[in-house]
Image 1 (cartoon, one colour):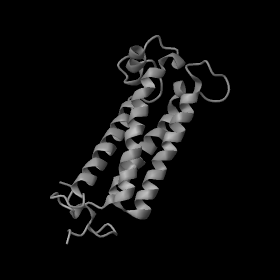
Image 2 (cartoon, rainbow, N blue to C red; image 1 turned 180 degrees about the vertical axis):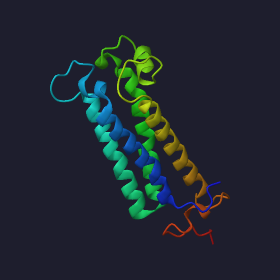
Image 3 (spheres, one colour; image 1 turned 120 degrees about the horizontal axis):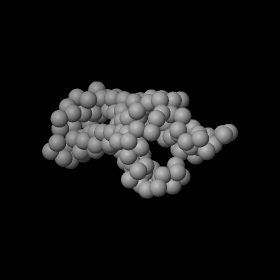
Image 4 (cartoon, rainbow, N blue to C red; image 1 turned 45 degrees about the horizontal axis):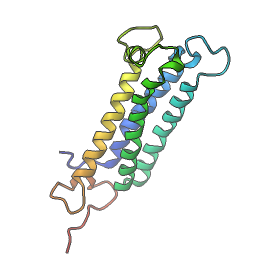
Length: 166
C-alpha cells in the first residue's frame, strides 16, 4: 500500500499539526484569555498547545535526520498520546468555565459557536494526529522485518530494507 514511500514524508503531518497549532496560538483569543478571565499572561491551555506544537517540530527533525524505522516508531509513540491529550482536553471543561464535558465538546468541535477568530482548528488538529498515528502504524506494519508485507516503503530512504533471515 505504501510501496516506495520515503519515511521522511511521515514528517509532513507533524509539520501540518505544528502549523495548525501556530494558527491556534496566534488567533484563538478564547485560548489566550480564558474567555476574559485572564487579564495578564496566558491561559494554561495556551501553554499546552505551545508545548504540543514544539513537539510537532521535534518529530520531523528526527525523521528527516535519521529516516529510520526507529524514528517512525517514536512518531507513532508521540502522535498517539498527542491525540489522547486532545481528546482528554474535553474533561478540563471546568477550567474553561463550562458546566459539563458535553458543553465544552460542543464548543471545541464548533457544534455551538461561541465566537473566536478561527473555527474548526481543534477538529483539524485532532484529525491530523489520528491520521499521523494510523499512517505511522501502516508504515511500521508494511516494513516489519520477517513479515510477508512489502518492505519497499523504506527503499530509497537512506536506509536499507531488512534482510531476509538466512
